[in-house]
Length: 432
Image (cartoon, rainbow, N blue to C red; front, top):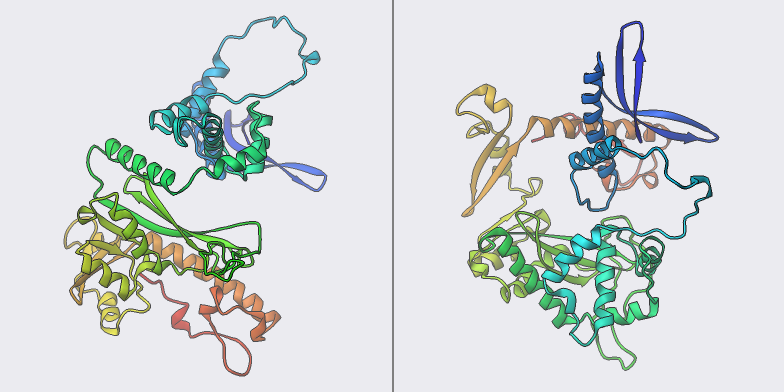
């Protein structure tokens, strides 16, 4: 990815673009990622190139799963500063004769390592286990920079940072991270979060995801003596499509600023809605939960969970399933009465820019929102899905050719006969 300038002599102007080289077979072509602007003099060229540098860094960061130390603007400004720095006329060496001996990455360890030590984790496993503490710290630093398996992390540390670790010793060091150590980490994280926020945590966001492992073997439900035991690795519904892999269910709890304050692990075949009560019990030992509002998505919306939160007297905000709402609530949602505009009051024009509505239901409040931007985006995705379905229906109408999930909501699967596109009202409306 680089910045390209193209000068048009006839119109006396220069176009600045962000492009990348794409290989197709044996040929390489340049693909335009972004037209940044048109300049008519040298000053405008420099200004637009600076803007292009920031946009290019943002594109690069959006593509990368790694956490970044600087913002796109800071990266672009640093690169511009380096390009403008004076260079010596003679380096005193012949670059053609230079060979790379090793590569060392600096900076991340200095910053994040200092924070790691300030949190008191330098002696996480006890003062006597100095080697194990050092290994765990290196693994954490590598995990922040480039999340990989332990084996791949050991190789990356040696190749990129010049740090050699024994893989067997790494595995033994990880065994020291037991429940008391994990509890200590959570308490320290909680204290650090409160210190950064300048007060007690009042809102917690709760969500679950699945983490698959590179194995199909599940933990046995019983040991060799036939005694029932905890089995964490299990196959279940996988959010990333790896249903054939053994997995665990991870419940993560963060503050409104995105600071993680705790997590819980559950067997991979656990339903998300069954994790909330166990996670709350674990939190009660670290938080004054009576002062905390819990926010979770619709997966947690079950009568048992709502009753449990109400019995504890805890305020909560849960996602609402409009499809399973009572008929009276659905009618109230679709009715224009009671809608309030996001901007202004009582203005019909303001209402078209987005609205919200509050509905009372069995002592709780259902807050419905509508955004024209979201509606257009949903309609576009829906139209694209239907277009693909029309093409698939031309090839085959046999039920076995279609999944009942995903696109299936637009189809009718009769007990006998061919698959057909469902009623028009399901596919032609822009839903709130």
